[in-house]
Image (tube, rainbow, N blue to C red):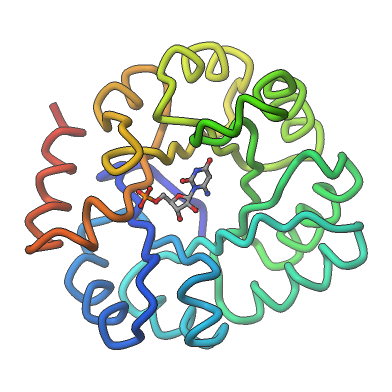
Length: 216
Ligand code: NUP
């Protein structure tokens, strides 16, 4: 699949209980553009959880792959074999490592998204000064898009200018303080929301509320 903006909402399913994960996926899968899985869920349930979630939505594997090219290729192959539609990798390891992910993704007809500036405060230590170089690297390696912070909409504006046609997925909405609408207005194509949805009393209502904000 190719990630296409409809609701513009991606849920980060960082729960660590299989039954809860599948229940949220079943309820929200039809409403969101993708479900993002990360280590907390996969370490508990195994890679097989991707196939189970795929019944309800596109799946992005947020494994922040950050190794030598050969190891990155092996990780991507197993992740795509498990059914993931896209994988997230780190760019700081260099172009050859990112390109290794893209090559495998192309074989499977899947996508790679590269982390540029992260959404947490610690991103200012090392990543922010190199964020534009990471955007350029993602483009040159042939990635479909990048990850950039909803917590800093002013940075999203600059990153959008630099990113050309690449898609921008933006985490940091809600629990980390970012605003969904502001992130889209600043240039993101999708927002990623985790705790503000899965910890809500009614996750479906919370997701619908975000989707309405994104539609305005
Ligand atoms: O820069 C990033 N920030 C971030 O929060 C890159 C990410 N991949 N994430 C992920 O997005 C994070 O690991 C989590 O899975 C999700 C945000 O969750 P929440 O803060 O909305 O609960």
